[in-house]
Length: 62
Image (cartoon, rainbow, N blue to C red; front, side):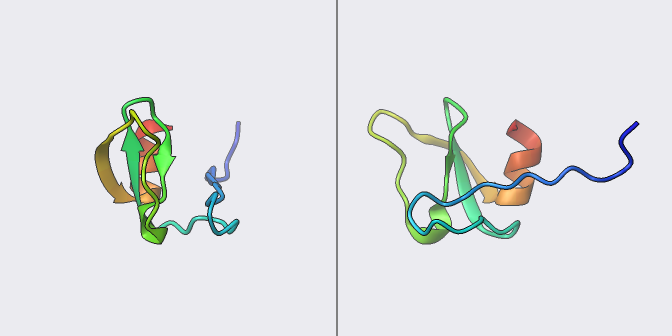
């Protein structure tokens, strides 16, 4: 089987840089990630249902 820990990598759409594990993000009701660390807002019609560090949110929802 796979022995290495899987790492999730996402890129911020505003800064075009990888999100760090400690960045503050939110997850919307349709499970899209909002990078709150850079001041991003969810798309119209979406709302953030949970906030936290990227590492914790990614493990929980993705």
